Image 1: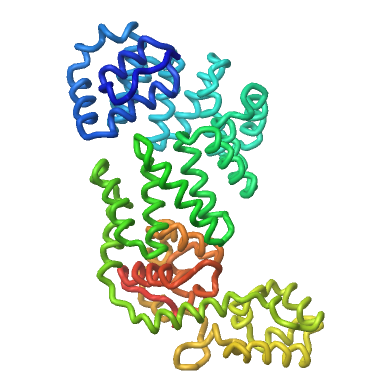
Image 2: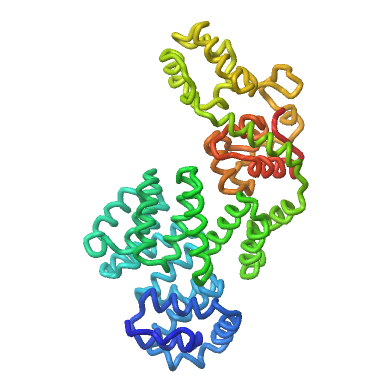
Amino acid sequence: MEELTTLESMGVREALTEAAAAELDLRAFRTIATLTFSEERGVDELRSILEDWDSIIGELGSKQLAGVLQGYSLYLMGRLDDAEALLESHKRHEWGAYWLVQTQLSKNRLEKALQVAEDAREKMSDFRPIAYVLSELLVRSGRLEEAGKLLDKLKKGDGDSSMHAAHLGFYQERMGEYAAAIESYRHAVRRDRSNAEALFRLGYALDIYGDESDEANEEAIAAYEACVKLEPVHTNAVINLGILYEDRERHHDAIKCYETVLRRFPNHERARLYLGDAHASTRMFYDKDQEKKADRHSQVLKIPVSDFELSVRSRNCLQKMNIETLGDLIMKTEQELLSYKNFGETSLGEIKTMLNQKGLRLGQGLETKGGEASSGRNPLEATASPDVLNRSIDEVELSVRSRRCMERLEVRTIRDLINKTEVELMAAKNFGMTSLNEIKRKLAEIGLGLRS
């Protein structure tokens, strides 16, 4: 494609006409998007152009090319139904098919998008962008073997490209190869810092699957921050960045993120919900001494049992029972340990001494605040509506970090959640006071609470 005019001297109309005069590529579409959303006047200009599209048709070459650019403009402005209807009539054009698929994806019409992409791939086998979006759709549809074969074919031509690395990372992520996926996203970003999807996926993968070091968290934030500087703003990146800011108690930065989304999408439910929570966090009173004490207790519960000098027999028994931390251990009773093969009184005494050093005891995680044995069920379960109790935990708008903890603890419904204690939650990896307060606040909104 010919070199585009410097952006500072261009308007949206010029970007559209230059794109039509040259060979269309992703860079040309990105230029149109950047000029549209970098300033408020860009949005107004594109809206005005769409209202009087006939005035620009003569500058855009063929009727088909003009239709593709009009469809893309409608897509940019969020007029997805109009964009889909128009692009449907121009799907024989390679970019018409590509943006039709992207529009259908934005409307969560996966099956229809997949059908269009497969048809376009068959007719336009040399058009790489549609091949890559097809690989993404195959992954999303669970057809991983087909996606892998397609990516292998594409690797021959541009295996070192940012586009290939980003889509390979998405495939590896769904295959459970998280470390490899992170490296692929990093490569994609190194090759092209303007690849918004690669930046978003890198931030997401580091936050969900990366190690728990501060370095990994900082890299996730940096990836999201780079992503949200690109136009049009990646909505999910902005929301996830806000969540990470909240995890670091940067509530005012989080508020700015959610407000950014709501300026463009005033009815965005998640952004509106998170904004309310972030504002509530700035007004919430915390007993600092109590919070510090709870955090220290949480850190103690996360200490690996391998850090203590135990006999080989005790260590092997704990390993076979999948007891990795002190938090896991206090969820067991003396009877449970003694019932395990090869675990005797000597090992029990050794374990109790180890726990005593940290002010803990066996069965502590199963006890009520009053010290009586717990029945194992939350009394609130008997008074709550079955419809509420059986709601999927996915319906509760939780932060990424809290959601990851729910997955680790195999909490799938509200019923599962209210039958967990604070100790059980705080013992989970990377679960702290911020997440605990979020869980308690969400349950309080529906008149429920954690098990005592």
